[in-house]
Length: 315
Image 1 (cartoon, rainbow, N blue to C red):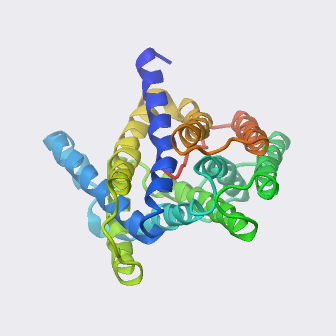
Image 2 (cartoon, helix red, strand yellow):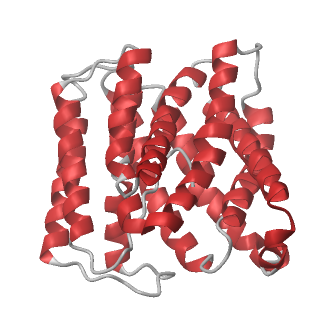
């Protein structure tokens, strides 16, 4: 990889890693529903501006994917790949540290590999579960088990049952990312990537915002820290990170881009420790090592470039 490509890789990891910190700050003053609604709306608005800035150069490609044919897939991906995981991660971070959430979310490639091996109904090319891949999955999920088992020994925000539920919420979000990622990869093949990214965010905001306004409206004006965190999360951690991600995919391919999966939780742990004063315990470090080791084994065992990094920060 060239110096510019490495810069893109580390920049993407920095953006996505910081998203867990932004969620942690904002969810203190607003509900997960409201947080995710604003995040999606800001991301959609930013991506629409980017689409407009692209000009006529891509007009033919964009017109080749009419909304009347794709609105149902866009809506499905918005629910599975945005609304559900974004909300679950935001809710989970009410009870667990942002660094722990990032490590648990790093299990997404493991879920993706497991689902692909099982032959999801929408996957055209199921992948064989080889012994090496089984070993990688076992190592990775052992890391998840270590994190969950360490809840009582490394008290974070919640204690006991609340912390456990927060961890489970993030794991379910990672599973949802795996389902949504596999579906999007098959359904949107050949479509300019900015279109699914834009309309996933737009449909998600339209669907979720009414529920947020009715069920969990803002009672007080949030602080500038919370407002700034949501703005950074929607514009930088979602919209701009998506654009950077797809640019990196185009330059170096999925195999090298997946390296961001290894950098992201490390960045998130650093952000949490430096800016949020979160402790980094033995269980966190051991769980991180096992999860990343499992991803590495699974990725090396794959016959084709099939696992792509799916994270909370954006799709």
